Every structure is written in C-alpha cells, then in structure tokens.
Length: 137
Image (cartoon, rainbow, N blue to C red; front, side, top):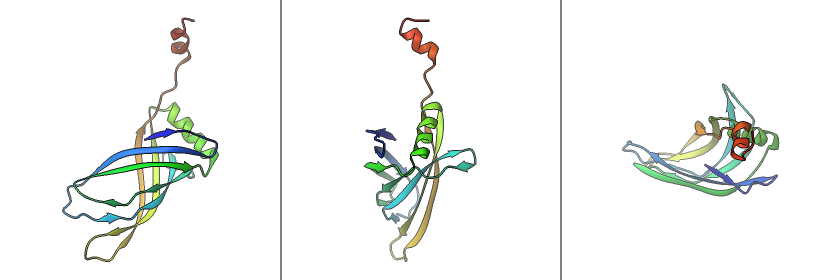
C-alpha cells in the first residue's frame, strides 16, 4: 500500500495485490465502499477514511488494483494511523464494508466484509543514528 500526496483532507492511495483461490467456483463481488481503521490489540478505532474497492471476478489468480484519491473522514483517527505506521514495525488495518456476491445460476447474496490485514510499518529513526549520519555525536 502506498500513500502519497497527503493534504489536510485527502491522500492518494495505490494498492496492487493478487487474490489467489483454489476453488472451482468463480463468484463476482460487486464494487463497494470500504472503511479503513487502525486496530490496537482487540480494539478497532473509528474509521479514518473510505475507499472504493473495485468489482472482482474470482479466478485462480485475480489482480486487484486501487489508484484513487481518498477523502479523510476523521483527521484525529488519520493522525493516529500515521503515528502507528511510522512508529511500528508492523500494524493492523481493518477494512469493512458490504457488497453483493454473485455466482452464476444463484441469487446474489449480501456479504459483510470485515478483514484485518497486517502490514509493514516504518520504525522511527533514532536520534543517535541521525546525528551520527550528520557527523555529530
């Protein structure tokens, strides 16, 4: 996941991933709006943004690409998200939303999507390393 061009109200989000499935079924998930929240242990914070996830037709390997400007819905929660990302080796992001699932020949069903993913964060730069790199101690 790459976040660029931050402003007080938005940021650009790019995500490239591949969904893999060994199932003989190949359903289609409708595009849907998903909220993004940071997880802290068993607690999930309020959403800081919403992202539009594209329609996905499942196959053995399905590429999914997101490239959009995302509006920040809660600046306090987004600030917390940035602190966690920058101060952690890894963090948990919660993606929630509701969509439709279609399998040929069957009636569409509603799916409540609630997924927690673990992502790599950025450890903070230590002052000793920073000053040593500048030739100071």
